[in-house]
Image (cartoon, rainbow, N blue to C red; front, side, top):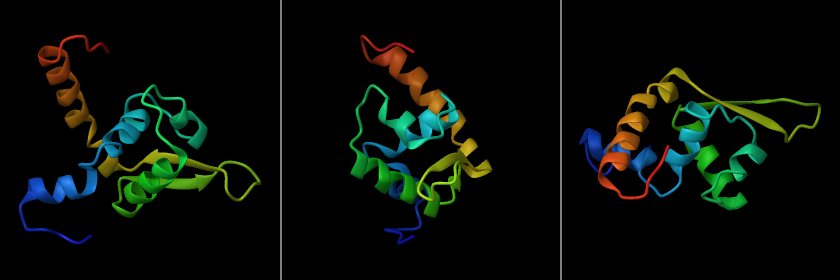
Length: 107
């Protein structure tokens, strides 16, 4: 991963700071989604090309792993690694902050 600086916040944002990555990780860590089609069902309506890109980004960052779930070589199941699971506390805090500070948000 190319780093803008050695700042841990900047480095973390380089990995998960875009519009979609934390939502894909949320779906895995909190909602136990694991298949491409399941991610597409989320209310945010991520496009297939963006989802593919974010899954690759999360995998190369060591936050998720993939493995085939059928005889079809392109059907993959994605699961968070320990590093990915460790993001749960951040997702929970971000959710709590949103509930407390952004009107109309719900769990």
